[in-house]
Picture (cartoon, rainbow, N blue to C red):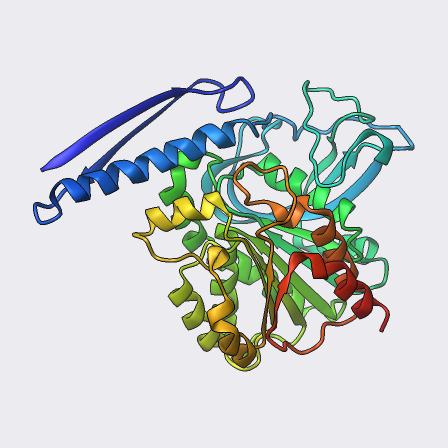
Length: 399
């Protein structure tokens, strides 16, 4: 027996832009009966609810065609973008959510309005194709790079520091959202490292969870290639990886692959931050074990109020997600593996799903920026509230 359920809901103009139709088929086995039916319908209902809530965070995707910006008050974030997405025929989109055949490199520069015109943690999306740079983010450069152009870019972007921040975005991100969110984070956290974005083929639609998950599997080769190129360069001495949501699984898999292929993760990869990780807790433990003793210092940003991860838990068959775990019973394991957990359950953020504190909370942004002031200590395995972050970051930076 199969049940086909269709849910139709109208969203705001800022959202998906039309009517969202979620039509899904769920196999029902007789031994589950009505209870199985209720669970299946509840899962779809939660997914559609997330779609409605997320629709309020909608934005234009056609913002990648560069415009000239001459406003001296606007700030510039100059980043390298590596992607496994398929190129789009529309230069305003630049890349689609479909899968490309290889890794493509771009140099993207994003203009950010002056401090007096914005709030920390917010991306001010353009309302038109030609935004006012004093009021909204804007793309000012978008050039395809060849491999021999990467190191000249890095030497300029790192300003002699030899440090790289690699960001791996999460589920439900189109190309523009990944680029603008990373630009916002780099600017607001005052990141003192060359910013590198790895963007994989997400369709930017909450109803494409399974497609996005399989796109992370597809993209392991790409992130692995980017990390290997970074650690092999004599111009790079320190690599920090920041990953969010579904991108954390991709990151851990790339690190596991590196350990399996080369005997260990490169010691140049000092720190890995997993923000709201959408990873099965058992899978994460296996990944940590397979990465081995030479693993980087891992910090997990978790929240028990993360609605997106609650939905993900349902979709995964009620298997706990790492980013929504109560870690208090696991403090001994954290100490054993040298993993730090920041409890962001009460962190202030604008995301109605409670899934974006890493980029929207001022304390977390400040701590992330300050982490580049000194090399990280060896992992000690601690569980901390988000309120303790600012003091810890300042203390580390003063060393």
